[in-house]
Image 1 (cartoon, rainbow, N blue to C red):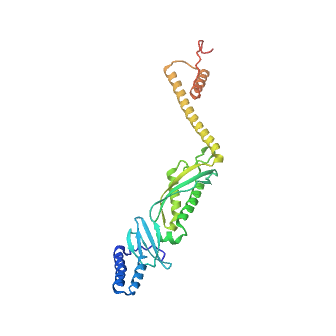
Image 2: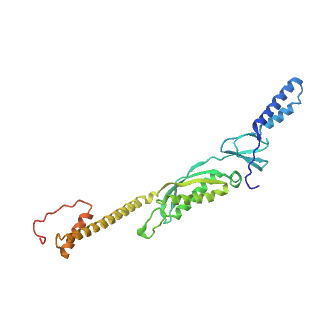
Amino acid sequence: MKEEKIIVPANGYFMLFIFLVLFFGSIATIIALKTPWPGITIFLSLIMAFGFVMVQPNGSRVLLLFGKYVGTIKKNGYYWVNPFYTKKKISLRASNFDSERLKVNDKLGNPVMISTILVWRVQNTYKAAFDVDNYENFVRVQTDAAVRKLASMYPYDNFADEGHAEDITLRSSVNEVSNALEKEIDERLSIAGIEVLEARIGYLAYAQEIANAMLKRQQATAIVAARHKIVEGAVSMVEMAIEELNKNDVVDLDEERKAAMVSNLMVVLCGDKDASPVVNTGTLSH
């Protein structure tokens, strides 16, 4: 048998009543009749006591008879089974696993530190008990392997200036990366009968040896983007100023004076410091 088999054993409370009747009835018989033969019934009732098993909510017991799989009890309650059954306990509760921070290389070869948070539970008790040696250790090892593979598939961040622009990155594409990670881990853990409820990146950062350099690079990229926005706005404002001056005939500027005005406006609008005005009391030519 290679599939999970759900069974519901005998009611434990009814068998407990039979056990008490046999055990104490045999003792009473020995006392009353002064004969040792009811001792056999006492011995059998004691063996019978090893068959009682309790299953808590979201718990299970895998039953074996001399190495042969008999079935799994998943319904919570108090039961009685064959006293010679080996009863292996497997929890069906959701478990949380926070992996260690791993140093891996992203798609561009940059070393990054990454960890994952995984929520999982056992779905198939047969696979968890017999298809892998230790299903809890299997979850840890396969999760680390999946995280390493995922990190190598995507870059940490977008670097369009070097021609490595990517739509999906580890830092910005949280939902896409989490879905890819969940799918990868689920495929790996299915052999052990494990169901993945949630998987997401818990920690992500550049490795220490390149963290400072990458921080400066990000700051430089932000400064360049801000400057680009400032220049774009300044050009729009200069164009508007020249159009309004020409439209209202405020002043007649030749090309040289127009170029000087544009230069002055661009300096004022794009400078990172407040401009110091200079009052010209002469003519425009001086």
